Length: 91
Image 1 (cartoon, helix red, strand yellow):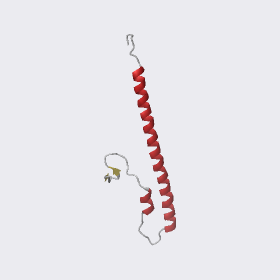
Image 2 (cartoon, one colour):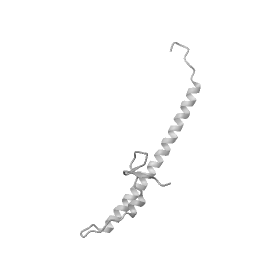
Image 3 (cartoon, rainbow, N blue to C red):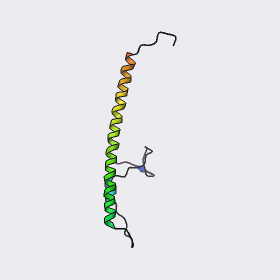
Image 4 (cartoon, rainbow, N blue to C red):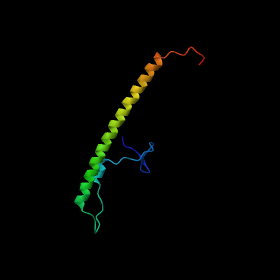
C-alpha cells in the first residue's frame, strides 16, 4: 500500500516521512562546474544508507519489544485484578 505524504510527513501520523536506505543509495545530484568528487558522494551515501538500515532495524526491534512488554503488563494487570478482593472497610 502506498503511503500518502503531505508536507513531508506521513499523512495522518504527524511524523516526518522516513528516508529509506534505497533512496539514499540511488539519489542523484545535478553536476556542477566545481562540484564534489562523485566517488566520495557515493561512499557517503553508502555509509548513510547502512546507518539508516541499522536504525530502521533497531526501531523495529524496539517496537516489537515494547509491544511484548505492553502485553505482559496487560496480562499481569488482568491477573492481579482477578485476584484482588474488594476492601471490606470504609474505603
